[in-house]
Amino acid sequence: MRTEELMQILLDRKLAQLGDSFVNLAYSLALTRNLGQPVGTKVSDKILADAARKAGIRRLLPRRTSRSDVSNAVESLAAYAWLHHYLTIDEASAVLERQADSPSDAFATLSERILKKLLSR
Image (cartoon, rainbow, N blue to C red; front, side):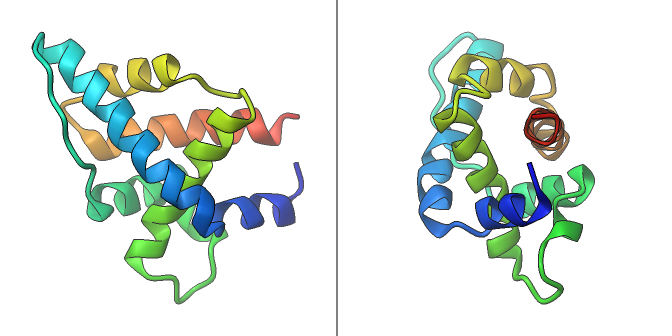
């Protein structure tokens, strides 16, 4: 995948809307498995923006990108990976489950895995 294609994915607002739900569901599943009881949660923009920085996504975005738009990039990436069969909800929640005590690290790991898959095709 070319850098231009990746940038288009990261900045896609419609993918980010779907990705918001995907990210929240995947993390809720991870917490549910860890705690042994149903949990529904929302992942904050701060956590996702920090994950984007750790995974190297932030440097791919324009300089003056807001924290909200940086977090949207992580959501867009996750939604794209799911829609194009690079990732299942179970795979995503399993990655997040292993690092549930540090959500930003968990989402950084997930983002790195997605990027690796996309860039290797």
